[in-house]
Amino acid sequence: MLNALDLIFLSDRKRRETIISLQELSAADEWLAKRLQEHVPKNVLRDILIDYRVNTMDPDFSFYKAIHGEKPAPLRPLSFG
Image 1 (cartoon, helix red, strand yellow):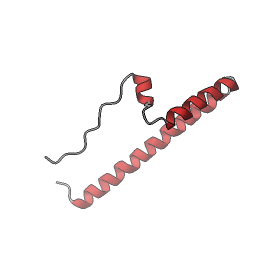
Image 2 (cartoon, one colour):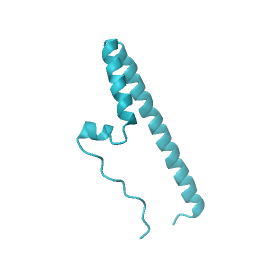
Image 3 (cartoon, one colour):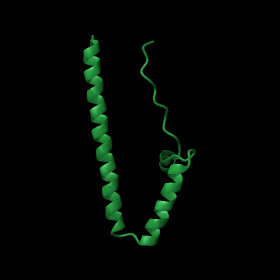
């Protein structure tokens, strides 16, 4: 059984792995956007950026749902019971 200190270090390792993964995902999105800018007309990019900004401000909009057609399944919290 893990003691409290082991749990703290495990939690910290998972947190760092998650941050690294999100940083890589963010960089991949930025790389894709920069590559697309080289090939997409400026007026089209402007319209897409406007749509993106509007959607990020809309609390009812879900990028996940827009892509997959439904909201993601809820994540179950850790349970001790």
